[in-house]
Length: 329
Image (tube, rainbow, N blue to C red; front, top):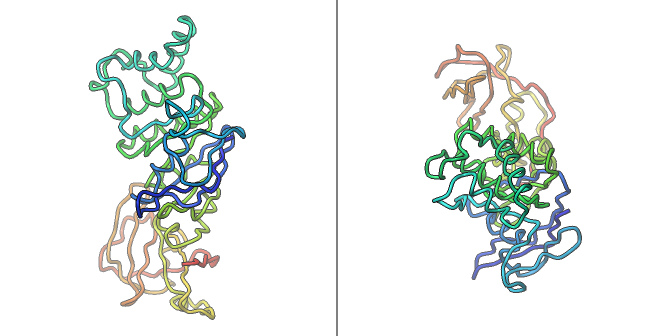
């Protein structure tokens, strides 16, 4: 079990990480989502023992993870961090890159383990190529294979999906599932895009300016975000003042300036609904997102599977559910 307790880290007057605490259970996937500059990479370095916290500590199974000021070689043998740049050896093959991580093991086991990892990470067809002759997704999978070669307890990933096209993103997503299932490895990754985090994480955290503002199962963070920032970081959302609920015939709450979170799927096209004008249509394949304006101050984005909606068309909109979520800020 990996635990962080009140971690803080500052660089001059920049507070990169501020009193962050959480626990990652064995065999679980945790995702931390935040905008650029929210402290994601700094936090990973603290967790991996590659940077010293100003206060707080990191523990693995109850034992404190030492930082660079405590050891000659920074890092921990049971924690692996995969950087965005992959850091592969450029002039040896994919297979040799993975094999190098097992160089202190007996030869027969090393060969068995490399074969196992190549199959697990879908690298069979490119194992004899050097890194510059493979795709970004294949480099990413090689870096992961090398990181888990000696079966660490914790795998940390820095923006694992940021440079990948959709097919490779899906392969990496499936790979993380397989790692947890077959290797019993705990996995924590940071990202600025919650799309993949929502689908594979057991626990989802929202980072803002170094502070962990929400930590819960993905469905709870999506449906009941703590703040407007958390709502926007986890997907498309309509954030309106409570006074505009009267548009749908709902009773206006006492605090008319209170913020309300409405996801696009909570609205639907309905001929009997409130009339508005379509301002934009974004085709997404399985559905379209459309922006509908009702007044100078009120505009909503909603989902539809209809393919006959056009810009400037008059449409009716109604709420599919009245369970509205009120935001703190």
